[in-house]
Length: 221
Image (cartoon, rainbow, N blue to C red; front, side, top):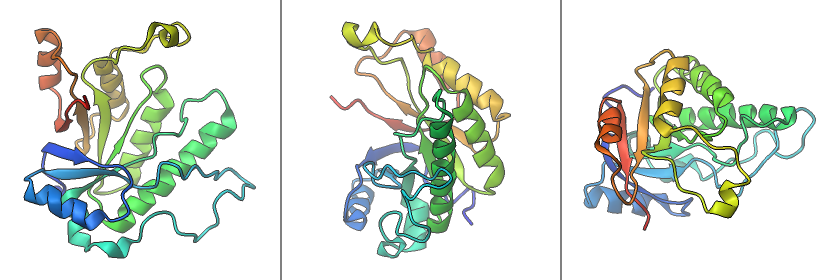
């Protein structure tokens, strides 16, 4: 399994979508002196159903790209795997919650098989308590895997039309703090912090500085 010293360094990473040829991307990132490559563990469009009785995914079927495209050492040292973001851990629909939980553990098993040292998961800022429970279960069921909560430094501003149809989300730091508390301060839990276009007020910056920030992602604009 991975050791604490084998996981990608805390620092600046480069983010890719589900690329067909990952090794050249990793090689280019290493050459450019990035600390890690953030990439989906499973293609984002592969939205399968694993609830009881479902035929959405056949046992033993290929889940994603082959593990043979890179050595285990490269998977461990450079790749940070993104867990699927389309899942609905805190849905009001029980079937969706059950499916999301099974997807989560299926992808953790795949990450462990690849010998990846770190996975990231992105909470919904409006509903995340079951997400936090799954994070805690994942930490307790894996001996060496590190988990980074993928979260923005400040809550994203939504267009007025959209904002009026959604319940307001909590401040990202409050969300992180609740997740951290529910995971009992596990040392393998960290933050992948997404930076805004403009830095927020100093008190917000200082609050984040006290947290276990493992990686930074710059603004996309």
